[in-house]
Amino acid sequence: MSHPPEAILFDLDDTICRYRRSAETVLECAFERVGVDPVFDPAAYPERYGDYLASSSSIGDLHRQCFGDLAVEAGVDREVGIAVAEAFNEERDQRAVDPLAGVPDVFDTLEASYRLGLITNGDPAMQAEKLAALGLTETFEPVVCAGYETAPKPDPEPFEVALEALDITPEKALYVGNSLTSDVAGAKAAGVPSVWVPVDGRGGETTRVSGPEPTFRVSSLAALESVPVLSM
Image 1 (tube, rainbow, N blue to C red):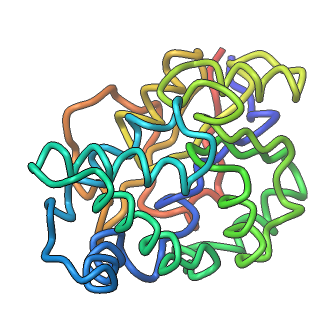
Image 2 (image 1 turned 30 degrees about the vertical axis):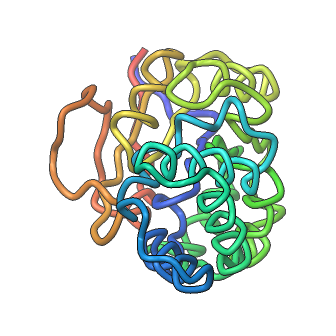
């Protein structure tokens, strides 16, 4: 027996929006501001971001911890890494994000028929700024900031918290995200059907990579105007 979902939950970064400047570009600017040569590979930060979600109290604290460790691993004083982190925080404008294809039109369509929620790995204040810049502050309820309010994705906890807030069972929800290893894996761990939206450009997964199989896949959020039907 098939049925439509009662609620659709979304990832935020690289699913709904993307920074106008990549982390690598902002980090290069931070090195210049501090007046040091790149003391670690700019590509190393995105790869390590998730390692600090559970231990950091804010995005600024995450950068200080991460960049300090990367500096030490490169044989440089931790204080240099922390100075780069402070410059990075000043350079990064959380409102300088662009909506991806289908945003915000798809949400205007979906919210007429479905309850919409957000499960994102990120600092609550940081993610709130992005939503405000996109005009989506009132679109999602609940908003779960994993890594700060719960364990980070792919742990099932943020999904369980969202489902409890919605008072629905996993099979009645649908989770949409761009990462197989974080979004699809987390949804699968929580028993929630998933939609994978591979994205192009920096930081995105453009082809099938190693990871769990999503329940559905679409080319962009715009395709979600036709919501997949779930099977019991």
